[in-house]
Length: 245
Image (cartoon, rainbow, N blue to C red; front, side, top):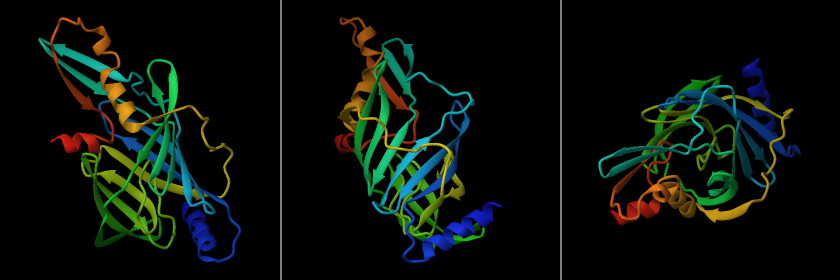
């Protein structure tokens, strides 16, 4: 059944002049972190505007909801931070996503993402489709992707984009964060629309706030400590942090 659905969508993409506005790409997200979980995610592709709206669906799988875990030893504090993106809008690397901010707020965060993909002369069959391999280093991790040139959509799940075909699989080389395409639909019962408009901040503002949230305000001002911030997310280091090195 899965293969028939994919073949149908391939046919639609290959015929010119079809007035198809939206397609839905369904992925399975497998996170092998300290708090392992599996979720379903949906990429809504708008053919006319060439953009996607990505939504990760919550499930009954156990997951860590706290933003920060704080471990204090002597004068050193280690902060481990988790996050879950509610929505991601991707228009050729111009990213806008919603995020919990502080204790009770939701904000819209702007980001700019570019993947320097290395196309590898290696291929494999995924659900009857010939897919090709690509590699990219992005914000502290090396990612391996498998894309299908016969489906002319240069997006994938989360923030991934920029390959000459739809991404069927993508995961970091340690296979901690894994995304697998499971099916493609023309219609869904669930609404995947643009998120509400909230206060707009930059990614850097968000990250700097998360580094301090729940930590600095609880410290005695007269106490000097060294804070080590450890991210527990797909992104380990950002561009402005790399520039400091």
